[in-house]
Amino acid sequence: MRIKVDNREKKNDHILQYFNQVGLAKVDKKSVKNVKELDFAYIVNDLCSIGDYCNLDKPNVFIERKADWNEFAGNCGKNHQRFKRELERLDECGGKMFILVETKQPLQTWQNKRMKITADIMAKIIEAWKKKHNIEFIQCKKEDAGRIILDILKEV
Image (cartoon, rainbow, N blue to C red; front, side, top):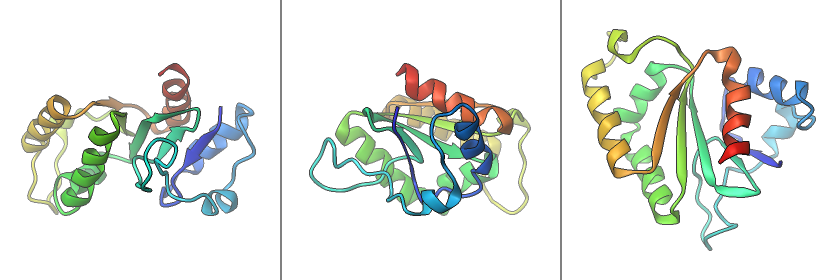
């Protein structure tokens, strides 16, 4: 399996270490910086980025990793237009996206005083996106993220 990692992906050492542990490939931050954004050049003519991880042998399945609900809240709020464009590209190519949130905290208990968005609003956004786009949300512990990413990319 050849996995492409978005070079804008931050704080993912735990995932790269897991990839190394299981012998997927020798991956480090230095080599990842040379990887271009995930692109869909294999299926469509124009370059566009979707997700943080994909299997180059099955380039229509993407994983978008979020460190926690706060990061996801940014996609519902100030970064909404950028994320909306990414979901539109996903629809155009007929792909599937898994949004992996690295927290076991239930969304219903999440609170953030810095943002105006609430857990209830985010839950409604998630349900609307799931109905409109081919996406699935998965929550996990940070230490399980690498394994889950590989499992998804192998199975789909």
